[in-house]
Length: 196
Image 1 (cartoon, rainbow, N blue to C red):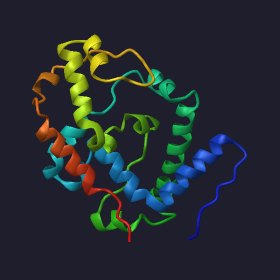
Image 2 (tube, one colour):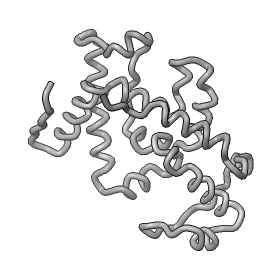
Image 3 (cartoon, rainbow, N blue to C red):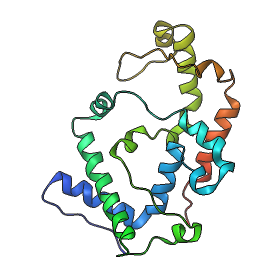
């Protein structure tokens, strides 16, 4: 296959082509990471993964998407729209029978799901095993003692206001967070790409 090179006249076209090319080479991996991050594994792999889905869904971003997009950069929304349109264009070719679904989908007997641009930002589980304890600690401190105490615990860069969680679920997270952490980290580690 070689190394893909993308040439385009517009930024939109570059990201569209990148999404299409990523899907062409790694559609199953993209689909798996999307499902894992959004808590959608059980719908294709069975009910034994419901606990993983429940854990992942606790971390899906549910805030103001406009503010979320702008927190990254002015162009982030349009980049995500173009990239996911490229992924979806490749999936459309599979759906229409122009090309065959990758082997993994055929072996596991399910179809790839189309992406929404917000999926890119809402996906949090892909990084949970790196900082879940810190995120739970932040939520717990904010919930119990407020932002001033959180500022003493951890410096955030860039500095920005935090919202104190009002969710009913926060007090249900165990103090050690071991079960939730173990659950999400084992899921995250199981899908790491292997070399060789």
